[in-house]
Length: 215
Length: 215
DNA sequence: TACAACTGAATGAATGCTCATTCGGTGGAC
DNA sequence: GTCCACCGAATGAGCATTCATTCAGTTGTA
Image 1 (cartoon, rainbow over the protein chains, first blue to last red):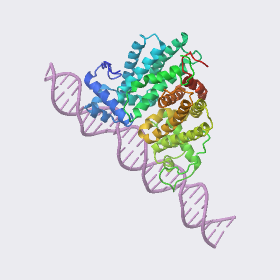
Image 2 (image 1 turned 45 degrees about the vertical axis):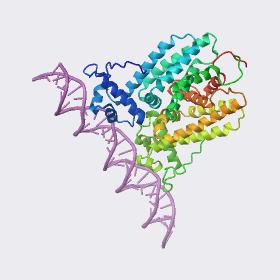
Image 3 (image 1 turned 90 degrees about the vertical axis):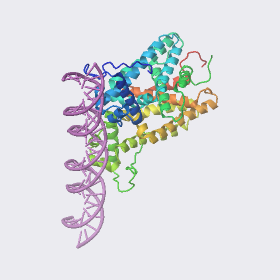
Image 4 (image 1 turned 135 degrees about the vertical axis):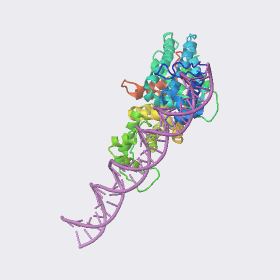
Protein backbone atom coordinates (compact mmCIF):
# COMPACT_ATOMS: atom_id res chain seq x y z
CA UNK A 1 0.00 0.00 0.00
CA UNK A 2 2.65 2.50 0.98
CA UNK A 3 5.13 1.41 -1.70
CA UNK A 4 2.56 1.42 -4.47
CA UNK A 5 3.77 3.09 -7.65
CA UNK A 6 0.47 4.94 -8.20
CA UNK A 7 0.89 5.71 -11.87
CA UNK A 8 -2.12 7.76 -12.92
CA UNK A 9 -3.23 5.75 -15.88
CA UNK A 10 -6.50 7.08 -17.12
CA UNK A 11 -7.03 9.30 -14.09
CA UNK A 12 -10.45 10.52 -15.06
CA UNK A 13 -12.58 7.42 -15.17
CA UNK A 14 -14.39 7.76 -18.48
CA UNK A 15 -12.67 10.23 -20.78
CA UNK A 16 -9.73 8.14 -21.84
CA UNK A 17 -7.83 10.90 -23.61
CA UNK A 18 -7.67 14.67 -23.31
CA UNK A 19 -6.72 14.56 -19.69
CA UNK A 20 -3.62 16.05 -18.09
CA UNK A 21 -1.08 13.51 -16.93
CA UNK A 22 0.77 15.33 -14.24
CA UNK A 23 1.44 12.45 -11.88
CA UNK A 24 2.53 14.74 -9.09
CA UNK A 25 -0.59 16.86 -9.17
CA UNK A 26 -2.82 13.80 -9.43
CA UNK A 27 -1.21 12.29 -6.39
CA UNK A 28 -1.33 15.55 -4.47
CA UNK A 29 -5.06 15.83 -5.02
CA UNK A 30 -5.58 12.23 -3.97
CA UNK A 31 -3.52 12.65 -0.81
CA UNK A 32 -5.19 15.93 0.01
CA UNK A 33 -8.58 14.31 -0.43
CA UNK A 34 -7.78 11.44 1.90
CA UNK A 35 -6.53 13.87 4.48
CA UNK A 36 -9.59 16.12 4.19
CA UNK A 37 -12.02 13.19 4.19
CA UNK A 38 -10.27 11.79 7.25
CA UNK A 39 -10.64 15.09 9.03
CA UNK A 40 -14.22 16.03 8.22
CA UNK A 41 -15.86 13.00 6.68
CA UNK A 42 -16.82 12.71 3.05
CA UNK A 43 -20.06 14.65 3.16
CA UNK A 44 -18.67 17.47 5.23
CA UNK A 45 -15.66 17.88 2.97
CA UNK A 46 -15.75 20.59 0.32
CA UNK A 47 -14.09 20.06 -3.01
CA UNK A 48 -12.54 23.47 -2.45
CA UNK A 49 -10.98 22.18 0.79
CA UNK A 50 -9.32 19.43 -1.19
CA UNK A 51 -8.16 21.86 -3.86
CA UNK A 52 -6.77 24.20 -1.21
CA UNK A 53 -4.87 21.45 0.55
CA UNK A 54 -3.46 20.19 -2.75
CA UNK A 55 -2.47 23.76 -3.70
CA UNK A 56 -4.54 23.62 -6.80
CA UNK A 57 -7.52 25.53 -8.12
CA UNK A 58 -10.99 24.13 -7.64
CA UNK A 59 -11.42 23.52 -11.33
CA UNK A 60 -8.18 21.61 -11.60
CA UNK A 61 -9.60 18.85 -9.48
CA UNK A 62 -12.05 18.18 -12.28
CA UNK A 63 -9.24 17.77 -14.80
CA UNK A 64 -8.15 14.70 -12.87
CA UNK A 65 -11.37 13.33 -11.41
CA UNK A 66 -14.87 13.15 -12.76
CA UNK A 67 -16.41 14.26 -9.51
CA UNK A 68 -16.14 14.14 -5.76
CA UNK A 69 -17.42 10.56 -5.49
CA UNK A 70 -14.78 9.44 -7.94
CA UNK A 71 -12.01 10.83 -5.76
CA UNK A 72 -13.08 8.76 -2.77
CA UNK A 73 -13.63 5.73 -4.93
CA UNK A 74 -10.18 6.03 -6.49
CA UNK A 75 -8.48 6.53 -3.15
CA UNK A 76 -10.10 3.46 -1.67
CA UNK A 77 -9.63 1.29 -4.73
CA UNK A 78 -5.99 2.20 -5.15
CA UNK A 79 -5.21 1.47 -1.55
CA UNK A 80 -7.13 -1.78 -1.49
CA UNK A 81 -5.62 -3.01 -4.74
CA UNK A 82 -2.14 -2.32 -3.44
CA UNK A 83 -2.88 -4.15 -0.24
CA UNK A 84 -4.35 -7.19 -1.94
CA UNK A 85 -1.45 -7.48 -4.36
CA UNK A 86 0.99 -7.40 -1.49
CA UNK A 87 -1.06 -9.85 0.58
CA UNK A 88 -1.42 -12.37 -2.21
CA UNK A 89 2.29 -12.25 -3.01
CA UNK A 90 3.31 -12.80 0.56
CA UNK A 91 0.73 -15.41 1.52
CA UNK A 92 1.43 -17.72 -1.38
CA UNK A 93 4.94 -18.19 -0.03
CA UNK A 94 3.61 -19.55 3.26
CA UNK A 95 2.51 -23.16 3.57
CA UNK A 96 1.23 -23.23 7.17
CA UNK A 97 -2.33 -21.89 7.39
CA UNK A 98 -1.67 -20.45 10.84
CA UNK A 99 1.30 -18.54 9.47
CA UNK A 100 -0.80 -17.26 6.63
CA UNK A 101 -3.39 -15.89 9.04
CA UNK A 102 -0.68 -14.35 11.17
CA UNK A 103 0.87 -12.66 8.16
CA UNK A 104 -2.47 -11.42 6.85
CA UNK A 105 -3.35 -9.93 10.21
CA UNK A 106 0.00 -8.19 10.30
CA UNK A 107 -0.33 -6.81 6.79
CA UNK A 108 -3.85 -5.61 7.46
CA UNK A 109 -2.91 -3.78 10.63
CA UNK A 110 0.36 -2.52 9.21
CA UNK A 111 -1.20 -1.12 6.05
CA UNK A 112 -3.68 0.97 7.99
CA UNK A 113 -1.44 1.51 10.99
CA UNK A 114 1.14 3.28 8.85
CA UNK A 115 -1.29 5.80 7.41
CA UNK A 116 -3.74 7.15 9.90
CA UNK A 117 -5.63 9.25 7.39
CA UNK A 118 -6.18 6.27 5.16
CA UNK A 119 -7.24 4.25 8.17
CA UNK A 120 -9.81 6.85 9.14
CA UNK A 121 -11.22 6.89 5.63
CA UNK A 122 -11.43 3.12 5.59
CA UNK A 123 -13.03 2.84 8.99
CA UNK A 124 -15.39 5.79 8.73
CA UNK A 125 -16.26 6.19 5.08
CA UNK A 126 -16.03 2.71 3.67
CA UNK A 127 -19.24 1.47 5.24
CA UNK A 128 -21.45 4.19 4.04
CA UNK A 129 -19.65 3.72 0.78
CA UNK A 130 -21.08 0.25 0.81
CA UNK A 131 -24.24 1.93 -0.26
CA UNK A 132 -23.19 4.48 -2.81
CA UNK A 133 -20.08 2.67 -3.96
CA UNK A 134 -21.53 -0.72 -3.33
CA UNK A 135 -20.16 -2.70 -6.26
CA UNK A 136 -16.68 -1.84 -5.15
CA UNK A 137 -16.66 -2.77 -1.54
CA UNK A 138 -18.59 -5.93 -2.11
CA UNK A 139 -16.09 -7.17 -4.66
CA UNK A 140 -13.03 -6.29 -2.63
CA UNK A 141 -14.41 -7.65 0.59
CA UNK A 142 -15.00 -10.99 -1.03
CA UNK A 143 -11.42 -11.10 -2.30
CA UNK A 144 -10.09 -10.45 1.17
CA UNK A 145 -12.36 -13.01 2.76
CA UNK A 146 -11.32 -15.59 0.20
CA UNK A 147 -7.74 -15.36 1.46
CA UNK A 148 -8.91 -16.06 4.99
CA UNK A 149 -11.31 -18.81 4.04
CA UNK A 150 -8.69 -20.56 1.97
CA UNK A 151 -6.27 -20.57 4.87
CA UNK A 152 -8.96 -21.91 7.17
CA UNK A 153 -10.11 -24.51 4.67
CA UNK A 154 -6.54 -25.71 4.17
CA UNK A 155 -6.05 -25.93 7.91
CA UNK A 156 -9.19 -27.99 8.24
CA UNK A 157 -8.23 -30.24 5.35
CA UNK A 158 -4.91 -31.04 6.94
CA UNK A 159 -6.49 -31.63 10.32
CA UNK A 160 -4.95 -28.65 12.14
CA UNK A 161 -8.23 -26.82 12.48
CA UNK A 162 -11.54 -28.10 13.76
CA UNK A 163 -13.73 -29.19 10.90
CA UNK A 164 -17.05 -28.41 12.53
CA UNK A 165 -16.57 -24.65 12.22
CA UNK A 166 -17.84 -22.81 9.18
CA UNK A 167 -14.90 -21.22 7.37
CA UNK A 168 -17.26 -18.47 6.31
CA UNK A 169 -18.26 -17.57 9.81
CA UNK A 170 -14.70 -17.74 11.11
CA UNK A 171 -13.45 -15.60 8.23
CA UNK A 172 -16.03 -12.94 8.99
CA UNK A 173 -15.15 -12.95 12.65
CA UNK A 174 -11.48 -12.77 11.83
CA UNK A 175 -11.95 -9.78 9.61
CA UNK A 176 -14.33 -8.17 12.08
CA UNK A 177 -11.86 -8.53 14.91
CA UNK A 178 -9.05 -6.91 12.94
CA UNK A 179 -11.36 -4.23 11.66
CA UNK A 180 -12.37 -3.37 15.17
CA UNK A 181 -8.74 -3.21 16.26
CA UNK A 182 -8.21 -0.59 13.58
CA UNK A 183 -11.28 1.39 14.58
CA UNK A 184 -10.26 1.30 18.17
CA UNK A 185 -6.76 2.48 17.24
CA UNK A 186 -8.13 5.29 15.11
CA UNK A 187 -10.32 6.56 17.93
CA UNK A 188 -7.73 6.09 20.64
CA UNK A 189 -5.87 9.00 22.12
CA UNK A 190 -2.91 6.80 22.88
CA UNK A 191 -0.08 6.20 20.45
CA UNK A 192 0.76 2.59 19.83
CA UNK A 193 1.92 0.50 16.91
CA UNK A 194 -1.23 -1.05 15.53
CA UNK A 195 0.55 -3.92 13.81
CA UNK A 196 1.87 -4.96 17.20
CA UNK A 197 -1.61 -6.25 18.02
CA UNK A 198 -1.70 -8.76 15.20
CA UNK A 199 -0.33 -11.73 17.13
CA UNK A 200 -2.65 -11.22 20.07
CA UNK A 201 -5.66 -11.24 17.78
CA UNK A 202 -4.56 -14.30 15.85
CA UNK A 203 -3.79 -16.07 19.09
CA UNK A 204 -7.38 -15.71 20.19
CA UNK A 205 -8.60 -17.29 17.01
CA UNK A 206 -6.09 -20.11 17.08
CA UNK A 207 -6.28 -21.00 20.76
CA UNK A 208 -9.47 -19.50 22.13
CA UNK A 209 -9.90 -18.22 25.63
CA UNK A 210 -10.34 -21.40 27.64
CA UNK A 211 -7.53 -22.69 29.79
CA UNK A 212 -7.87 -26.46 29.57
CA UNK A 213 -5.93 -27.68 26.58
CA UNK A 214 -3.14 -30.03 25.53
CA UNK A 215 -0.08 -28.40 24.00
CA UNK B 1 -35.10 -2.81 22.33
CA UNK B 2 -38.22 -3.98 20.60
CA UNK B 3 -40.35 -4.01 23.75
CA UNK B 4 -39.23 -0.58 24.89
CA UNK B 5 -42.08 1.61 26.07
CA UNK B 6 -40.73 4.67 24.21
CA UNK B 7 -42.55 7.34 26.15
CA UNK B 8 -41.69 10.62 24.52
CA UNK B 9 -40.73 12.60 27.55
CA UNK B 10 -39.25 15.89 26.49
CA UNK B 11 -39.13 14.99 22.81
CA UNK B 12 -37.43 18.15 21.64
CA UNK B 13 -34.14 18.15 23.50
CA UNK B 14 -33.95 21.68 24.83
CA UNK B 15 -37.38 23.28 25.07
CA UNK B 16 -38.79 21.47 28.05
CA UNK B 17 -42.30 22.79 27.77
CA UNK B 18 -44.50 24.03 24.96
CA UNK B 19 -43.92 20.95 22.89
CA UNK B 20 -46.49 18.62 21.43
CA UNK B 21 -46.72 15.27 23.16
CA UNK B 22 -48.34 13.15 20.57
CA UNK B 23 -46.60 9.88 21.27
CA UNK B 24 -47.89 8.31 18.11
CA UNK B 25 -46.63 11.07 15.85
CA UNK B 26 -43.27 11.20 17.63
CA UNK B 27 -42.79 7.50 17.15
CA UNK B 28 -43.96 7.63 13.57
CA UNK B 29 -41.38 10.25 12.73
CA UNK B 30 -38.65 8.27 14.46
CA UNK B 31 -39.56 5.07 12.67
CA UNK B 32 -39.84 6.84 9.34
CA UNK B 33 -36.44 8.39 9.90
CA UNK B 34 -34.78 5.08 10.66
CA UNK B 35 -36.34 3.59 7.58
CA UNK B 36 -35.30 6.50 5.35
CA UNK B 37 -31.79 6.64 6.79
CA UNK B 38 -31.45 2.92 6.27
CA UNK B 39 -32.48 3.27 2.68
CA UNK B 40 -30.47 6.29 1.56
CA UNK B 41 -27.96 7.01 4.27
CA UNK B 42 -28.12 9.98 6.60
CA UNK B 43 -26.63 12.57 4.27
CA UNK B 44 -28.69 11.55 1.30
CA UNK B 45 -31.92 11.60 3.29
CA UNK B 46 -34.10 14.66 3.07
CA UNK B 47 -36.10 15.81 6.03
CA UNK B 48 -39.02 16.00 3.63
CA UNK B 49 -38.55 12.29 2.85
CA UNK B 50 -38.92 11.54 6.53
CA UNK B 51 -41.95 13.78 6.83
CA UNK B 52 -43.54 12.14 3.80
CA UNK B 53 -42.99 8.66 5.13
CA UNK B 54 -44.35 9.63 8.53
CA UNK B 55 -47.39 11.24 6.88
CA UNK B 56 -46.66 14.54 8.47
CA UNK B 57 -45.79 17.98 7.19
CA UNK B 58 -42.16 19.01 6.95
CA UNK B 59 -42.55 21.59 9.68
CA UNK B 60 -44.09 19.11 12.06
CA UNK B 61 -40.81 17.24 12.26
CA UNK B 62 -39.36 20.33 13.92
CA UNK B 63 -42.03 20.33 16.58
CA UNK B 64 -40.64 17.02 17.80
CA UNK B 65 -36.94 17.25 16.97
CA UNK B 66 -34.52 20.13 17.02
CA UNK B 67 -33.00 19.18 13.70
CA UNK B 68 -32.03 16.33 11.44
CA UNK B 69 -28.97 15.39 13.49
CA UNK B 70 -31.11 15.12 16.57
CA UNK B 71 -33.39 12.61 14.91
CA UNK B 72 -30.53 10.25 14.19
CA UNK B 73 -29.04 10.80 17.60
CA UNK B 74 -32.36 10.07 19.30
CA UNK B 75 -32.96 6.94 17.24
CA UNK B 76 -29.55 5.55 18.05
CA UNK B 77 -29.61 6.52 21.70
CA UNK B 78 -33.07 5.11 22.29
CA UNK B 79 -32.18 1.81 20.71
CA UNK B 80 -28.84 1.53 22.45
CA UNK B 81 -30.26 2.44 25.85
CA UNK B 82 -32.95 -0.17 25.49
CA UNK B 83 -30.42 -2.78 24.51
CA UNK B 84 -28.05 -1.98 27.37
CA UNK B 85 -30.82 -2.05 29.94
CA UNK B 86 -31.93 -5.45 28.72
CA UNK B 87 -28.37 -6.75 28.54
CA UNK B 88 -27.47 -5.62 32.04
CA UNK B 89 -30.62 -7.10 33.51
CA UNK B 90 -30.08 -10.46 31.89
CA UNK B 91 -26.35 -10.75 32.41
CA UNK B 92 -26.41 -10.05 36.10
CA UNK B 93 -28.45 -13.21 36.57
CA UNK B 94 -25.72 -15.36 35.04
CA UNK B 95 -22.75 -16.43 37.09
CA UNK B 96 -20.71 -18.29 34.50
CA UNK B 97 -18.64 -15.87 32.37
CA UNK B 98 -18.98 -18.10 29.32
CA UNK B 99 -22.75 -18.01 29.67
CA UNK B 100 -22.64 -14.26 30.00
CA UNK B 101 -20.74 -13.94 26.73
CA UNK B 102 -23.11 -16.34 25.04
CA UNK B 103 -26.11 -14.37 26.19
CA UNK B 104 -24.60 -11.04 25.23
CA UNK B 105 -23.80 -12.30 21.75
CA UNK B 106 -27.34 -13.54 21.40
CA UNK B 107 -28.87 -10.29 22.58
CA UNK B 108 -26.63 -8.26 20.30
CA UNK B 109 -27.50 -10.28 17.22
CA UNK B 110 -31.14 -10.60 18.17
CA UNK B 111 -31.62 -6.88 18.78
CA UNK B 112 -30.33 -5.97 15.33
CA UNK B 113 -31.50 -9.14 13.65
CA UNK B 114 -35.11 -8.35 14.48
CA UNK B 115 -35.07 -4.88 12.92
CA UNK B 116 -33.21 -4.69 9.66
CA UNK B 117 -33.62 -0.94 9.26
CA UNK B 118 -32.19 -0.31 12.67
CA UNK B 119 -29.36 -2.68 11.89
CA UNK B 120 -28.54 -0.82 8.71
CA UNK B 121 -28.50 2.48 10.57
CA UNK B 122 -26.21 1.03 13.21
CA UNK B 123 -23.82 -0.57 10.78
CA UNK B 124 -23.75 2.23 8.23
CA UNK B 125 -24.33 5.44 10.11
CA UNK B 126 -22.96 4.84 13.55
CA UNK B 127 -19.34 5.02 12.51
CA UNK B 128 -19.54 8.29 10.76
CA UNK B 129 -21.63 9.45 13.65
CA UNK B 130 -18.61 8.70 15.74
CA UNK B 131 -17.25 11.87 14.23
CA UNK B 132 -20.12 14.28 14.31
CA UNK B 133 -21.95 12.83 17.27
CA UNK B 134 -18.78 11.62 18.91
CA UNK B 135 -19.55 12.04 22.61
CA UNK B 136 -22.49 9.75 22.25
CA UNK B 137 -21.20 6.71 20.50
CA UNK B 138 -17.91 6.60 22.32
CA UNK B 139 -19.65 6.58 25.66
CA UNK B 140 -22.02 3.81 24.65
CA UNK B 141 -19.25 1.75 23.13
CA UNK B 142 -17.37 1.86 26.39
CA UNK B 143 -20.43 0.69 28.32
CA UNK B 144 -20.86 -2.25 26.03
CA UNK B 145 -17.21 -3.19 26.18
CA UNK B 146 -17.28 -3.02 29.94
CA UNK B 147 -19.82 -5.84 29.99
CA UNK B 148 -17.53 -7.98 27.88
CA UNK B 149 -14.38 -7.09 29.77
CA UNK B 150 -15.99 -7.83 33.09
CA UNK B 151 -17.04 -11.27 31.93
CA UNK B 152 -13.55 -11.96 30.65
CA UNK B 153 -11.90 -10.61 33.78
CA UNK B 154 -14.14 -12.78 35.96
CA UNK B 155 -13.33 -15.80 33.85
CA UNK B 156 -9.65 -15.12 34.22
CA UNK B 157 -9.93 -14.55 37.95
CA UNK B 158 -11.61 -17.90 38.44
CA UNK B 159 -9.09 -19.66 36.24
CA UNK B 160 -11.45 -20.58 33.41
CA UNK B 161 -9.84 -18.21 30.93
CA UNK B 162 -6.20 -17.78 30.11
CA UNK B 163 -4.68 -14.96 32.10
CA UNK B 164 -2.09 -13.91 29.53
CA UNK B 165 -4.69 -12.40 27.20
CA UNK B 166 -5.60 -8.75 27.49
CA UNK B 167 -9.28 -8.46 28.34
CA UNK B 168 -9.31 -5.21 26.41
CA UNK B 169 -8.05 -6.78 23.21
CA UNK B 170 -10.35 -9.77 23.51
CA UNK B 171 -13.32 -7.54 24.19
CA UNK B 172 -12.62 -5.50 21.09
CA UNK B 173 -12.26 -8.62 18.99
CA UNK B 174 -15.45 -10.04 20.42
CA UNK B 175 -17.40 -6.93 19.59
CA UNK B 176 -15.75 -6.67 16.19
CA UNK B 177 -16.66 -10.23 15.32
CA UNK B 178 -20.31 -9.74 16.23
CA UNK B 179 -20.40 -6.39 14.50
CA UNK B 180 -19.11 -7.97 11.34
CA UNK B 181 -21.70 -10.72 11.54
CA UNK B 182 -24.34 -8.01 11.56
CA UNK B 183 -22.81 -6.15 8.64
CA UNK B 184 -22.52 -9.32 6.68
CA UNK B 185 -26.15 -10.16 7.42
CA UNK B 186 -27.29 -6.69 6.41
CA UNK B 187 -25.51 -6.91 3.07
CA UNK B 188 -26.49 -10.50 2.40
CA UNK B 189 -29.16 -11.40 -0.09
CA UNK B 190 -29.99 -14.53 1.82
CA UNK B 191 -32.53 -14.65 4.60
CA UNK B 192 -31.32 -16.21 7.80
CA UNK B 193 -31.85 -15.70 11.49
CA UNK B 194 -28.94 -13.55 12.60
CA UNK B 195 -29.18 -14.55 16.25
CA UNK B 196 -28.65 -18.13 15.17
CA UNK B 197 -24.99 -17.28 14.58
CA UNK B 198 -24.33 -16.30 18.18
CA UNK B 199 -23.16 -19.67 19.42
CA UNK B 200 -20.80 -20.24 16.51
CA UNK B 201 -19.12 -16.91 17.17
CA UNK B 202 -18.81 -17.44 20.89
CA UNK B 203 -17.48 -20.93 20.29
CA UNK B 204 -14.57 -19.52 18.30
CA UNK B 205 -13.66 -17.22 21.13
CA UNK B 206 -14.00 -19.86 23.81
CA UNK B 207 -12.30 -22.75 22.03
CA UNK B 208 -10.29 -21.32 19.17
CA UNK B 209 -9.69 -23.02 15.87
CA UNK B 210 -6.99 -25.54 16.72
CA UNK B 211 -7.88 -29.18 17.06
CA UNK B 212 -5.68 -30.44 19.88
CA UNK B 213 -7.50 -29.93 23.18
CA UNK B 214 -8.88 -31.74 26.20
CA UNK B 215 -12.65 -31.56 26.66
C1' DT C 1 -77.74 22.46 24.16
C1' DA C 2 -75.86 26.02 21.19
C1' DC C 3 -72.66 29.09 20.07
C1' DA C 4 -68.68 32.25 20.41
C1' DA C 5 -63.93 32.84 21.78
C1' DC C 6 -59.75 30.95 22.18
C1' DT C 7 -55.73 27.76 21.74
C1' DG C 8 -51.86 25.67 19.85
C1' DA C 9 -50.72 21.66 16.80
C1' DA C 10 -50.00 21.19 12.23
C1' DT C 11 -49.08 22.86 7.78
C1' DG C 12 -46.21 23.73 3.58
C1' DA C 13 -44.66 27.54 0.77
C1' DA C 14 -40.91 30.70 1.07
C1' DT C 15 -36.25 31.76 2.41
C1' DG C 16 -31.57 31.89 2.18
C1' DC C 17 -27.40 29.50 2.24
C1' DT C 18 -24.14 26.08 0.91
C1' DC C 19 -21.58 23.89 -2.28
C1' DA C 20 -20.45 20.89 -6.68
C1' DT C 21 -19.54 21.83 -11.05
C1' DT C 22 -18.65 24.77 -15.18
C1' DC C 23 -16.33 27.64 -18.43
C1' DG C 24 -14.22 31.85 -20.31
C1' DG C 25 -9.85 33.56 -19.73
C1' DT C 26 -4.58 33.56 -18.55
C1' DG C 27 0.16 32.56 -19.00
C1' DG C 28 3.97 29.66 -19.70
C1' DA C 29 6.26 26.22 -22.74
C1' DC C 30 7.93 25.15 -27.07
C1' DG D 1 2.10 32.05 -32.38
C1' DT D 2 -0.20 28.04 -30.73
C1' DC D 3 -1.53 25.01 -27.46
C1' DC D 4 -3.18 23.41 -23.27
C1' DA D 5 -2.81 22.94 -18.26
C1' DC D 6 -4.53 25.66 -15.02
C1' DC D 7 -7.21 29.05 -12.74
C1' DG D 8 -11.11 30.73 -9.84
C1' DA D 9 -15.24 33.56 -10.12
C1' DA D 10 -19.87 32.63 -11.38
C1' DT D 11 -23.75 29.62 -11.63
C1' DG D 12 -27.68 27.41 -10.03
C1' DA D 13 -29.53 23.24 -7.96
C1' DG D 14 -30.61 21.29 -3.72
C1' DC D 15 -32.20 21.37 0.79
C1' DA D 16 -32.56 22.45 6.04
C1' DT D 17 -35.15 25.34 8.50
C1' DT D 18 -38.64 29.02 9.41
C1' DC D 19 -43.02 31.21 10.21
C1' DA D 20 -47.50 33.23 8.84
C1' DT D 21 -51.64 30.96 8.50
C1' DT D 22 -55.23 27.43 9.15
C1' DC D 23 -58.53 24.90 11.63
C1' DA D 24 -59.97 21.05 14.87
C1' DG D 25 -60.87 20.87 19.20
C1' DT D 26 -61.67 22.84 23.94
C1' DT D 27 -63.39 25.99 27.23
C1' DG D 28 -66.59 29.26 28.90
C1' DT D 29 -71.12 31.47 28.83
C1' DA D 30 -76.07 31.79 28.85
